[in-house]
Amino acid sequence: MAGLYLHIPFCKQKCHYCNFYSLASVKFKPQLIEALLQEIELQKDYLQGENLDSIYFGGGTPSLLNEKELNSIFEKIYKTFSVGKKAEITFEANTDDLSKDYLQMLGKTAVNRLSIGVQSFNDKELFYLNRLHTGKEAKSALKRAQDTGFSSISLDLIYGIPIATIASWQENLRQFKALQIEHLSAYNLTREENTAYDILIKKGKYAPPTDVQGEEHFKFLLAFAKENNLEQYEISNFAFNQKYALHNTNYWRRKKYLGIGPSAHSFNLLSRSWNIAQLKPYTDSINKGLLPSETEILSKSDEWNEIIMTGLRTKWGVEINYLKQHFDKIWLENLNQQTQKYIESGQLLKSETHYRLSEKGLFFADGIAADFFQVKEL
Image (cartoon, rainbow, N blue to C red):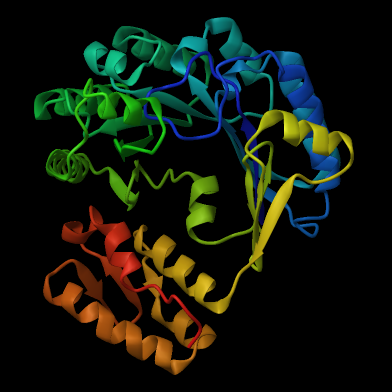
């Protein structure tokens, strides 16, 4: 089974913190839709006939697609690939796009899961992030989605916002719980280079996020999750009753996926490819029948590093037997030495079968994983 990702790079306005490729205009939407359909045809053999068990519309803002555009994409997907009957089909949306009419239209398509970018229910924090909606509007949109028949919904929240308090973060989580939504994605606010947020910090208009505040909010999040039987299955992702996001879980567990659209990435176990992150060069290339992408063949050390990085982010951890079967003994010996200080500090747990991060180590996952990377072939 494999996944399909489609990048819709249009937004009504750019959020201050966002570093994903997007444009604050829909001027070239028709050209983009046509290019997506052509790229699907060009890439029809990439997954080597594997069935799709997940389709994910990301962005940008997929909820800027209208009914005709969305149906044309689905028609092409179903003509080109074999889609599983129980495939998870996720559609990212902003709350301000989810009118009753739009939700009813989505309900008539193959979409069966919504990922809704709320980020906060606090109006001051939303203004700080340059979001268009208010907290009240977000709650109304979520309830409309539920009333329309969408039971599989994921909600995004951001913590570590400099103007936020532990009380406002607590209230955001309380609002999430009250809405009875099955999945939560919670992300620590980060300062990405050349974003509006980065520029505002450099000008002294915004304060930079701090690890101290981020860790404090993260610890509260973990306590909230435990208290409410909300399972943390990946550092930033939580679910009730094992309602995991299949598309993202497949990514962390290194399953094949094909990315369509400007800046989209693809993975076929042996290599990674990524499309150019510019709309016109992307559409121009596709219109000539050429893929606007670069490809990197994964070395043994690349494979090792990805297994470590993605595995340590999840509740499943890194499987020791898999490492033994696919890598030379010296790689395991080095890892055993490198992990000792983290095991002794209580940040890393080792069983007979797996390495996993403890609650104490989760907030520092990226730094810990980087210490176990191989920078050259052994």
